[in-house]
Length: 227
Image (cartoon, rainbow, N blue to C red; front, side, top):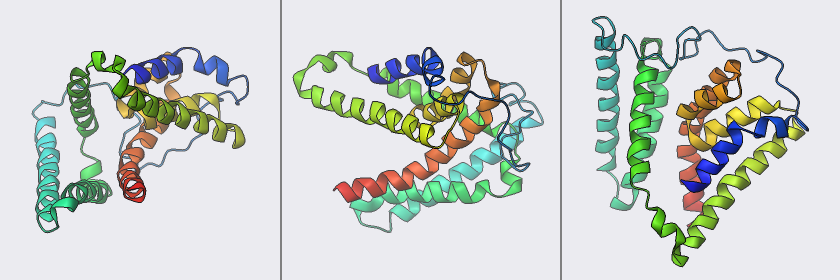
């Protein structure tokens, strides 16, 4: 929580000015977005109105129903494997099925499902944040964990900026991508607003959502490799 807060404030305040000294400046809408992207560019991502309207509510129920089925299938498959592999099976099954159904036009064109997903992510984040115990931060046995998290978060940001320098990625895109991959998609509009650049929201959200999916596979692979 502490490391994340400090790094987020850095990204929202002085990072743009600092990175502009050695990274290219953002020059406009240089990323072409395919017409079949799940997020409608004309749809306000912060607009939660109409979700419970007579036309919108049934569509959300369909999306929730499909999500429930995916979770049920993932849970069922986990019962077919040894107990040590059950959680891995659930995570990978839900991720794979979610990616598969997202390719169907009848699913990815359901309106307001992105906002509904954002809402659940925000609720999840609130619950996790409410469990933070800052008093443990100052106990010696937790300092190694604090140091490890600092190394991962700050180290990954440093590597990311270094790669952006090598491949000449502009500063705004670098900042929004770091935000999406470090903090998750709900933080993208906030940081984009702080940077006064709305053009990077779609690319940031896209990278963040892909990060969720790829991270599940890659994270588990690294965990088992280290084990």
